[in-house]
Amino acid sequence: MTDDILSFEEAMEKYDPVLGFEVHVELNTATKMFDAAPNAFGDEANTNITPVSLGLPGVLPVVNGKAVESAIKLGLALGCDIAPVSHFARKNYFYPDTPKNFQTSQFDEPIAENGSIDIELEDGTVFTIDIERAHMEEDAGKLTHKGGAAGRIQGADFSLVDYNRSGVPLIEIVTRPIVGAGERSPELARAYVAAIREIVKNLGISDARMERGNVRCDANVSLMPKGTTEFGTRSETKNVNSLRSVERAVRYEIQRHAAVLEAGEKVVQETRHWHEDTRSTTSGRPKSDADDYRYFPEPDLVPVVTDAEWIERLRAELPEPPAERRRRLKADWGFSDEEFRDVVNAGAMDAIEETIAAGAPAAVARKWWMGEIARIAKEREVELTETGATAQTVLELNKLIDAKKINDKIARQVLGFVIDGEGEPAEIVEKRGLAVVSDDGALTTAIDEALAAMPDVADKIRAGKVQAAGAIVGQVMKATRGQADAGRVRELILEKLGVEG
Image (cartoon, rainbow, N blue to C red):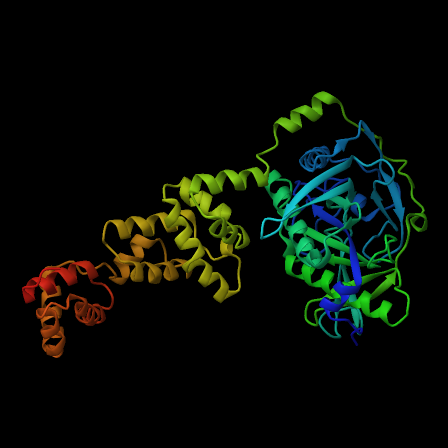
């Protein structure tokens, strides 16, 4: 059963949304946050564990130094102050995938605080989002629910627990309340999470694959009646793991809250679960405040102490910020605002940059990645980078076209064969006999046959209507399975009929 909702337009007429985001980023360190168990995705269940992962009696955790450096780098990239001293704490709660009955996290003394990030929407509008804190913690394990509908706990026959993820290093980034976004709130939610994903991927600290849970968002939404300034009661939609879902979840919660308030009822402070299939949320549990978790200092871990020299060394290692990189690449490539926006939205920027670096012209790289490769990716429902096409693929196809060994039509066929795993472009052209027919003798034979079959068109060409030659070219291309050089065919047609082009 889904909740009543108000139309988004009516909700925006009566209420101002207040947003807040808690984004969890899994780090790609070799080992876990507090023990030497491997940090690897997709391995057999319950194989990447140690007694520390399971919180067995008598074990002692040790902080992962690489994870601390990753947290500092992320804090610097978000413009945060890095704490000279930060502490770990125990966040106490019971859940089957948390075997210790507490999560080792940071509470009142996080590693990074007081930052901000500028978020640019598709039309160029910029929102500044204030970052309250970024703190280190460990991930929980994973439950898989068997039986019932859609793998949910509701109606499941039983659940399986995999502790491989238990203890994986996490950084949680918490924003301050975000007001003033209005009807653009869902769009801003998507753009913010996309920006965080881009930053952590750019820093090299996370694989940032949302479908694997490397980046997950808890989206907080509340509403204020127009003209008021007091925040309403918030809901928190947990563990949303796609950009599209973040946008949809925020939109839905705005509509749901508005319907509750319009009915004269009170919004319940609770966690919610997003369901992509129904594009709706359902109630989880009443939302606990910090006091309910009974935080207390972790007695088995020493404080994390930083100094200026360490911080400045890490600052010097930071790559070019994504926003600055985008501005530079747009200027270098000569793309229009619209062209570059399409490239960014399609997730093609890295692929195009790599293709240009390999030696392809910017226009050629854009044509392939935003054209045929994007079409295949959409058809197969995969990301651009998951099609199997590479910068070298595009470069080799372009070289074959420039050498007039293949034409654009054949190149698109060859790309499909490359993606199907048949090999590299040149060997596919050779193996399948796809090279352009450049022998004038063979082309002349095909032209003669086409002219004989279309005498009326031949007469029009002789009369000076040279554009009619296109029909003959089309017939020759058909006869040669698209492997003729169309330009050369046209030249030969006009020569044969004694007409100047």
